[in-house]
Image: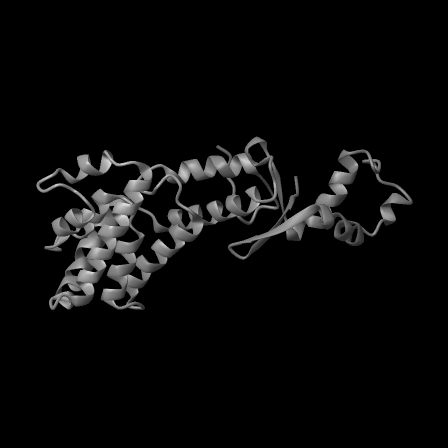
Length: 241
């Protein structure tokens, strides 16, 4: 796998995909279809939980609402006495194995059941007299769970950046899966000159008058065929296809 960085002058979409796959290794608790926005919200709420920028109750609600896996939800909330009641409200038969019941649902039914379970738990948090005590316990239990599923928050933050770049790029370029170039804004004028040489618009051994071309102006005109993307403080241009 090629070593790439979000600060590179030129990126190939296939290298970005390989990097995304690599960063998912060891973080398979993430949903396959997780978006950059979802991952960042989840990470930010976790960081806030530890830094005290968010009340324990608000953080607990954030994590519960953002969890898309029934097992993870049950593990994180194992101290909630009304978890089984939440399952029942979602339609699970009495004494049913939660995992088996959930797996037997269609994808749409699973989404609906999770929504009901999450709402029931959150409503309980908002009315339970032991809410503060629960939230303090949730802090301990969630941190234990989080430490167990990932070793490197920086990797997840990097993954969110690559997912963000892919999501933006795919909206404008249909060649993403087969290979699309992303050109850094700082490298744009140089790239345009190299492109002109590659397609034979100017000779590679540039002499007069080609060595007096205003490449900044030429690059500006070429932007009409491209879209600018912004990720992690970096700007890239990708061709519209």
